[in-house]
Amino acid sequence: MPWIDSNRCTGCGICARQCPVSAIVMENGKARIDMDKCIRCGKCHDVCLQDAVRHDSERFPRK
Ligand code: SF4
Ligand code: SF4
Image 1 (cartoon, rainbow, N blue to C red):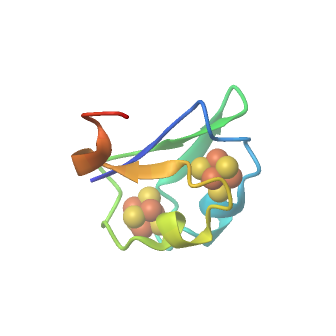
Image 2 (image 1 turned 120 degrees about the vertical axis):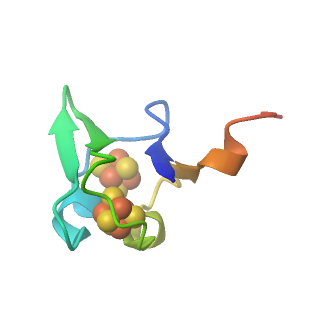
């Protein structure tokens, strides 16, 4: 399941425009993924220039 690292996200909105099911909404200048809509296609991860779209396996440990 993808998630957004808000420390990296610049709020550029690229991922929201590219998401095929409009699962990404912008909130307070950051992207947020609606998990109910997300089909886990991975496109947001591919297009994010900041590497802000992470995956569950990256939640921990953080080096
Ligand atoms: S593409 Fe990356 S930096 Fe831009 S809004 Fe999406 S998650 Fe944030
Ligand atoms: S993985 Fe695909 S469906 Fe899910 S938020 Fe990213 S672009 Fe949208």
